Length: 188
Length: 247
Image (cartoon, rainbow over all chains, first blue to last red; front, side, top):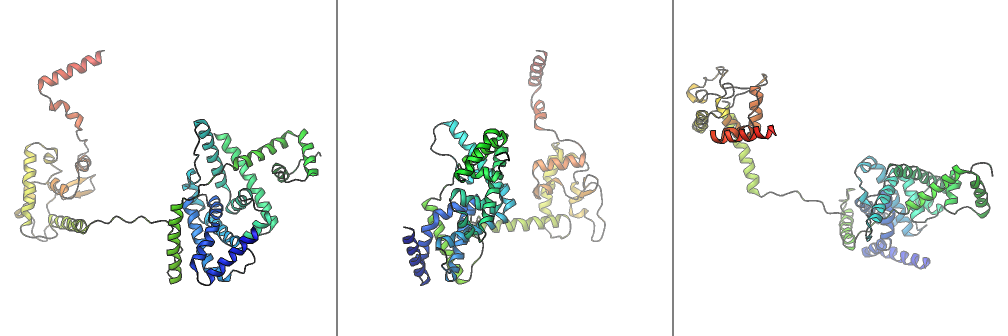
């Protein structure tokens, strides 16, 4: 299955490099949900996430000819997007600390019990705030390992880092989350 | 195992990433160590809570919009007109006023400047004094009715001071006193209330200017209640007030 997807990607990439613009859009279509999920969890804001994806696609579009195909196209595209997202968080650190609202992530829907809703609301708010306290790289590593279930070696490849550094970064991220969540819980 | 395990090891235990042997050693320690049990539970709780983070995917319509913006930007990139400023979402357009409104604003501003210049004597055109005289006449009417802006000695210039025949000749010093509005003893405006109204001051601002120039407060609308009543009505109102206080 994975091999077949990889072959399909290769075909699309060849088509795009031969001048077929629609092949590039199809490549994006195959990755957009996963890409959005990863980027959104790093930048924690819908508009920023879409901006970051757009910038990443433009970079991929311009750099596709130089892509050496040592990894899959989707890995390469994700790598560009994650680095772009990290840069965005670093750049907008102070602005985002102030302006990002809890509603940058999804509010609860489809629940009929108001008590459950309130509890869920508080929980999501708490987690969102705690995640926003994380430095950009730790947030990216936590996102990819915890939510995307990527291996440390895969994350290291995406970030151009070492496996040991990724593991250490992940541990520091969870430890910070533990402290933040504990503090936020006690404030409620 | 007597030594406390590291936090990293406890996290791995919480994530079931330890092999069987390591896990059994840690569990043995946990049976006798309250603080490590507490820490392990905190890590488990952190992972449980973190899983609650959810994101909302863009709708199909939003993706379509995104795609349109992306195509436009990619075309711009090819033309070399690429800007790093993202354009995936539509930018709000500035409000476009019709030409007659824009023209009207310019004309009104120009008229204001001309009037102020004329009134302060910087420029002089025959016939405009008639307009000013009109304002002065209305001022006189207001004064005869006891309007507060028309009766203050220091706040209003006399008609004569604005009349053309009373103006100082070119090069002469303007007479001080009756024609000046003194503000806090430092600023003097050579304008009367008509001119102030022409200059765009509303009633509240005129009140403020009056207070500043006279160090007195302006009578509020509520204070005028009794004045608006005739003698019988005043007596009735006072009677009601007295009875309410005595209760």
